[in-house]
Image (cartoon, rainbow, N blue to C red; front, side, top):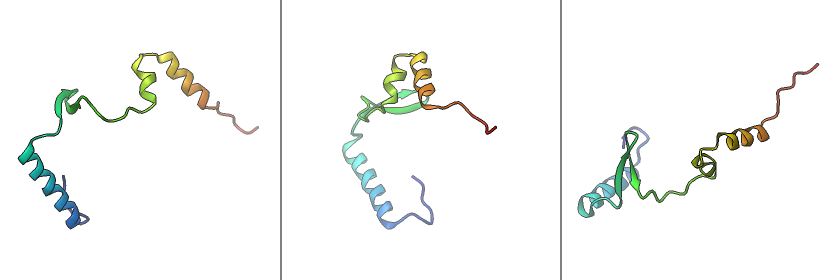
Length: 77
């Protein structure tokens, strides 16, 4: 959290409420270290549709997806 000129009283109240909740109840999730960052385990966030293509390690599918959406450059004659 950073505080600055644009930080409202509501922002500060929300931050202090979250800290109070964390101290009183502990974290709501378990976390694990992943590539130098802490991420929730399990991660409840929905995955974007693109993640399905990347999860299988199919570079060819990714190339096909990009190729189907990108038109070749055509310079005016």
